[in-house]
Image (cartoon, rainbow, N blue to C red; front, side, top):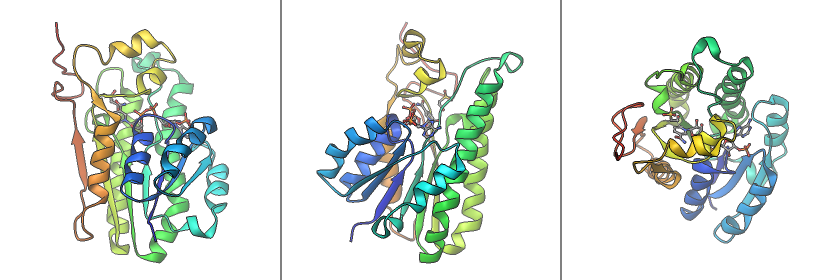
Amino acid sequence: MNKIALITGATSGIGKATAIELARQGYNIIATGRREDRLQELKAEISAMVKYHYLVFDVRDKDAVHAAITSLAPEWKAIDILVNNAGNAHGLDAIDQGKIEDWDAMIDINVKGLLYVSKFIMPQMIERKTGHIINIGSIAAKEVYANGNVYCASKHAVDAITKGMRLDLTQHNIRVTGIHPGLVETEFSLVRFKGDEERASKVYQGFEALKAQDIAEIIGFAVSRPAHVVMTDITVLAGAQANSTTVYKDK
Ligand code: NDP
Ligand code: 8X3
C-alpha cells in the first residue's frame, strides 16, 4: 500500500511543487490550502500518478483544522509524512511602523497554524510508531534582517518548535526535519507586498533565485532517506546569495 503525505499550502509555490514531487515518489497525496479551485486543478496532475485527496481549511482556524483532519476516511488517516509548509510574510516594515493585522497573520499562520495541524496528526503517528514531519522554516529562522522583525520571529519559532518536536517525538520513531530556504521565486513576495507585482518581481531580478522545485527535491531527498537516517536541519540559499540580505545581483 502506498504511504500518505499531507502537504499544507499546496495551492502554490513550494507546497504545490512538493505535492507533485512526493506523488512522483509514490506517496498518495493530501493537499491542503484555502483556494479550492487550485486544489481541484492539482487533482488532474497528481491523480494520474497516485491517489489524491484535498482538504480546504484556513490553518488559523483550529476548529476547521480539527474538523478537516477528523473528516478523513479510514484509508487516508494513516499519514506518514506531514509537510508543514503553509505560511507567508505580511509586510516589510520597521517595527514601529508594523501593522497589527500583519503581525497577527504571521504569528497565527506561521506558528499557531503549524501547531494546530501537527496537533491533530501527531497522535496517529505516535500510535503507529512511524512518521516524518517536515517544517518549512526560512533563512529568516536563522537570521534577523531589517524590517523582517515579526516574520523572522515567526520563523525562529518554527525552528524552535522543530527542535522541540525532535526532542519529544524521536522516542516514538518520528523523524523531524527543518528546511530553511533563502530566496525562492513563488507567490511569497506578492503576498508580502499585498499584490504589488512590480515590487514583488524586483526581489528576484538580477540573479537566479531558487525555484519551488529545488526545495521540493530537497524534501523528496529528506523523506527518502533510510529509516536510520534523519536530516535535521537544512539551510539552502540561491547561488548568488551569501546570507539573508547579501545577494550578488547583475549590475
Ligand atoms: P506561496 O505564497 O507561493 O505559498 C504559500 C502557501 O501557503 C499557499 O499554498 C497558501 O495557500 C498557503 N497559506 C497561506 N496562508 C494560509 C492559511 N491561512 N491557511 C492555509 N494555507 C495558507 O509561498 P511559498 O511557497 O514561498 O511559501 C511556502 C513556505 O515557504 C512558507 O512557510 C514561507 O514562509 C516559506 N519560505 C518561503 C521562501 C521564499 O522565498 N519564497 C523562503 C523561505 C521560506 P492558500 O492561499 O490557498 O491558503
Ligand atoms: C523567505 C525568505 O529572505 O524573505 O522566508 O526571509 S526571506
